[in-house]
Image 1: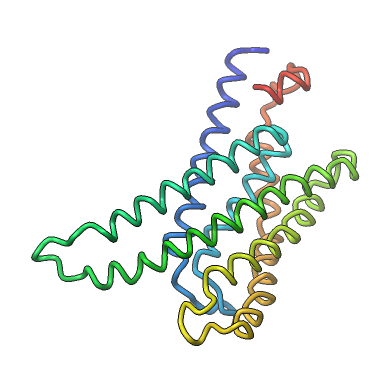
Image 2 (image 1 turned 180 degrees about the vertical axis):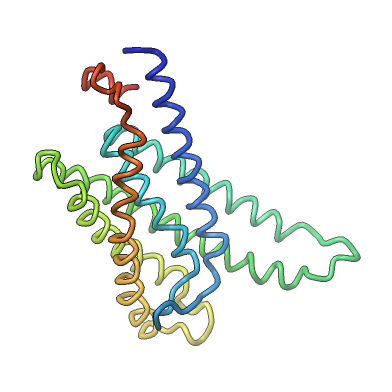
Length: 226
């Protein structure tokens, strides 16, 4: 295998890993705010979190399950580090002139719960997404990337949305009852499905970018191990 090709592939994979972790962590930091999109109540983290599924599907298409699993493990570690640092930030006493400690603690206390909810939902849903994408890849004999991307993401997003919404918002305030949470899940999930359909062209673009023309020079085993 050409060393230059291998280095380029590793650099591109590392860039995607950086974007993946950034989107994952930011989705949780900003995720305690709830907004309304097309009449659907949703966490503002919805603008960042779908990026993680987009990236893992593209990486699995090109690099395979083992490399994609590294993304999942790295993301999980990043969430653990985030929750520890947020907790330290809350517990540190404010300077005498700092006037926003109550607001800071209120916002980031919710972020801890959001991060815990995301850790659980993330690990389970992303593990399912890897399995489902690979399952449909075998069924389609490596064809119809758009179908595999959407089938795996639709199911995984339902798992993620259900787990995340219950853990993150149930009784956060008295308004978040079980009935209210169930009312949030279905439209929130459908909104995520819409995002998943919209990101399909980007999956193709990332796959094309990650898979260089020089791939033809590599054996299948060498390419996956690059």
